[in-house]
Amino acid sequence: MSNIVTLRNVYGKEKAPCYINPLKQKNGMNYPFVKKVRTNADGSTEMILSEADLNKVESQYFIPEDEKIELHDGVSFDLDNPRDRNIWECIKDSFLIAPERNSRDSKGNLLIDGGPKRYGLAEFYVERPGVESAKRISRIKQVTKAYMYIEGDTDQGRLTKVKLLGKSMRNAPSSDIQDYLYQRADKNPELIIDLYTGSDTALKLLLIDAKDKKVIIHESGVWMYADTSLGVTDESVILYLKNPQNLNIYESIRNETYPDMAGVALKDKPIVKTTTAKSKATKE
Image (cartoon, rainbow, N blue to C red):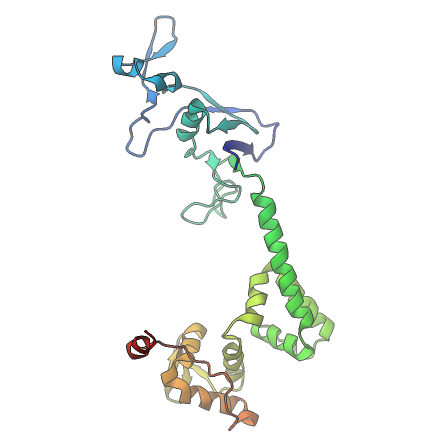
C-alpha cells in the first residue's frame, strides 16, 4: 500500500495555491516537532532551540511555527520521509482539507460542498487511488443484483413489490411496473434487494393490505386491531406481530385480511426466535 498522501483541489489545477501555518494540537500546544521562532533584525525568523533540541537527531526535521506550507492540486507528502510526515501531521486536520471527497461533518453537512444553508469550507481532499473505482464497482454490482431479482420475478410479484414501496399501480401495464422498479433500483439497489430477501416482506405486505381493508385502523396516533393496540409506527406493529406471544393476534389479522387463507396452516410463522437460558444450557 502506498504511503504517499496526495491532495486534490476541487477547483482543479488552475486554482492558485494557498499557504497555511502548522496547526496546534487539540490542547492548544504546538506539536513536539513544531518550534517557536524569534525574529532577527533583518526581519527573518529562526527556530528557538534548546541545547537538548540541537542534540537530537530528529532536529533536522523540526518545523518552525511560522512555516508557510503550500497547498495546491497534486501536492504530495511522503509519510516515509520524516519531514513530510511531520508536515502532514500538523496540517491534516485543517478545515481546508477533507479526508475524502464526500466527507461530512458531525451535522451531516459535506465538508466540501456544504449543506442547504451554507457552503463547505474545505477545498482539498485526500486522493485515495482505487477507492472511488472500488465504490463504483460495488454499486454497479448491487444495481445488477437488484435488476436480476426484478427480472426473475413474476408480473404479480413485481406488482406486490411496487405495493410495498407505497405506490399503487394496480391497472398499470407490466412494462410500466417493471420500469418503475428498475428506476428505484438505480437510486437505491439495497432497498429493492431487501424487498426480495428481507425476512419481514410478508408482514409488510400484510400490514398494507390490513390497512386497506380497515382490519387495522389508526386511532389517536396508534394502530389498532379491534381493542388491541399494535404500535404507533409500522415498524413497531411489525415487531408486535413477530412476537411469539402475539401469534394469535397475527393469525386473526391474517385471516380477516385474507379470508381465503383462513384455516390454512402457516408455513413460516413470523416470529422472533428467542433463546432461553434453559435451551442454551441444553445445547451446551
